[in-house]
Length: 108
Image (cartoon, rainbow, N blue to C red; front, top):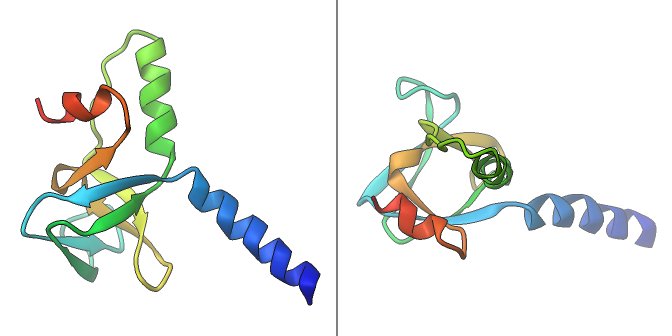
C-alpha cells in the first residue's frame, strides 16, 4: 500500500512540478476539449483564477530564445480541467507567470 502511495505521489507530483502557472486576464474564459473554438467546452474559469499550463511552453520559449528566434505564441495552451482531463485554453486569455523578463514581454 505504501509503495502504491509513493508511486502515485512521484508520478503526479513530478508532472505538475514542471508545469507553469498562469492567471486568467479576461472576465471569463473557456476550457475546450480540442484546439478549436468550436470544440466542446469542458468548463469556464473566471478572471483572476490561477490555472496550470503544460511545461512544454516554458522549454519551447527557452529553446527559441537560445536560437535567437522569435517565440510566437501559440493560439491555445494545454492545461487540465477540474476532472483531470487534457483541455485547451486560448493563449490570449492567459498571462503566464515566468518569474523573469518574459512576463513583461507578454504585455507588449
